[in-house]
Amino acid sequence: MKIDWAALGSVFGVSLAVTVGLVALFTLGITALSHRERAASRGGSTALALTGAYVCFAACAAAVVYGIQLIVA
Image (tube, rainbow, N blue to C red; front, side, top):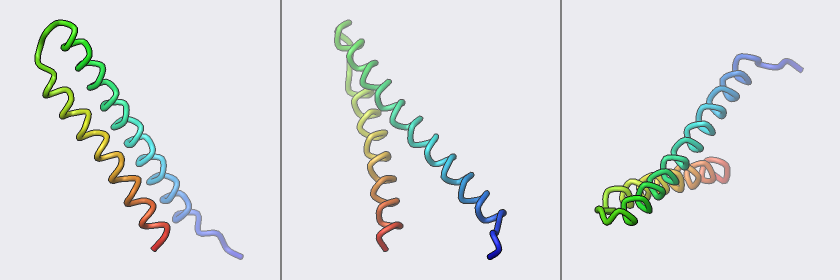
């Protein structure tokens, strides 16, 4: 049996990059919700922060659904 180390390294690199990217995107969503709470306590507008949080969470959900589709198909 021969192991293709280049392919294994490529899979590892892509997996690591996607994982870090998803965690960063989810963190941005949480941060946007935090900004929304601060803006609401000051009496400011919360629409932009809430929209940003929804976009981040929707992108995370889309990436998860895409990953599940790749595994199942």
